[in-house]
Length: 215
Image (cartoon, rainbow, N blue to C red; front, top):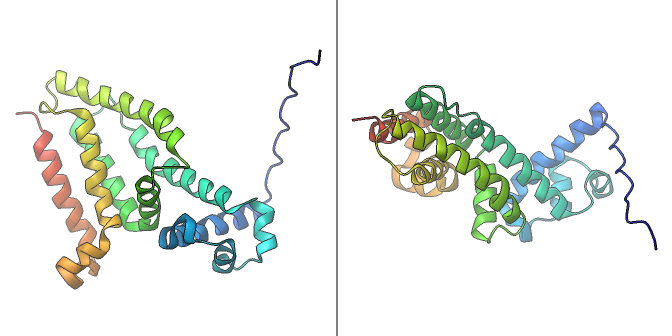
């Protein structure tokens, strides 16, 4: 009978500086292409053209379009969840949530393509990241919901369901990236003026934070 013991996986060879630069260029270009065309509409040729590489050169770094897409999504989620994971249960609740909401709004302003890409993945049933949502994300949300619940129990926040607070923060902050066309259609050129996101941040912070302050 053959042994079922498997050999340890080989350690991945560290990337050189130029390889790291090229890999980042591919992922940045792919983010723009996927956000505009979706997974089905995007092509490797288009991504290669956008980042200034030949198709064979691009395929040296990523074996398929799906592989690129998954890497872009994982990178996006890693960036998004970092400030959420950093919520400190021992800090002032209102200031911690102010910091998190502000960070999310900055991401919507600086990286709207990332938000649109994620929204498109979710609207299509999350075929690539469904497992991540039901494992890592669920665990992290349960953990932070517990923190918020304890703040409410301690009288540091108004009585509020922690999950719906988290969902409200996500929906409100990502709206400015996902529905920028709708925002511009409603308020016109004001949306593109300097200071617009600062104004939006003040409004969102006021609405949410005033609603959760202890009474």
